[in-house]
Image (cartoon, rainbow, N blue to C red; front, side, top):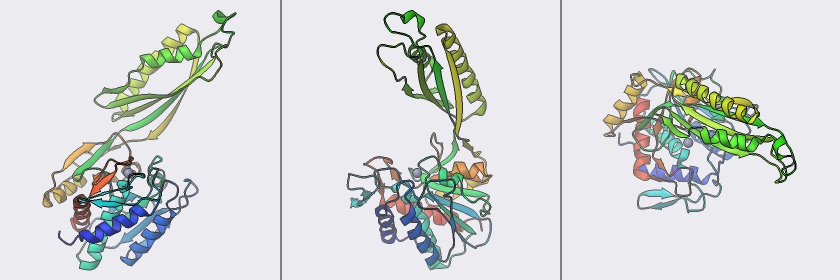
Length: 369
Ligand SMILES: [Zn+2]
């Protein structure tokens, strides 16, 4: 596919990068993309999610009729901070920020690639499948835009988000994410005269934490402990302590087994102190599992191979909008769009990778008609 115009693509990316859209403040990006999608002949719909999501923008949905199986192409419009006043700098074939902000290639590289592919279709009149586009708000704050998107409108049974790093990467698995909020109740007492009357909630919680395995505890599970709090004064035995445990696990069964192990630790330690505990669980992500044998994987790999890109099937420990699509019944995968160093001031993207990403988008739009 040599229709991709590198110069136009770079201009487009730079325009998006310079258009500030930190999470919740995507309005200008929404307006810009709506206009460009309309100019390319797509039907644009404002997917207003403001009842559920704090934003001055909306999800931008657009569709283009075609022949064959429809496919959803997606990327998120929001960026992490500091993402305002971005001044993209092109140096030796790579685009950086000027060093005091992020670049926002996560995920504006994906947006630029999808728009470039649509521009190629518009110019060439090349036959293509029915195309649906969804650009979301507030992905970075927990997939909020995609979780609340208008799925009644979406006809595609398969969806790809362009929101991973290296070109060729195809993420087909993401973990279930749970956060456990633990509160330990002890008993306050004077630290000097009545120390032995107290129940030391802080020490009890610290003991629990010391016994909780963290990091990659097995091949499918990553665990972290954070936000340990026990406010109080030095002259009192602390009666309250709390902390959070985050579990990311690719297997529901292994997750349950691990939780049992945690419960045993909580029981044992609180009993030894005479303390009590309460536990609240929040599901942060239902996870996503697309089997390697799914036709979507085959289609993506075929497009990669036709472009001389080596496919790298992967699992990701984070989240992306594809996880929301999967929760709404689509077969979804997250594809590399070329960004590197995301969420940092060193974030960058190679022009060559933008071009390859646009070719991948175009390949998927025109395959399987
Ligand atoms: Zn992203």
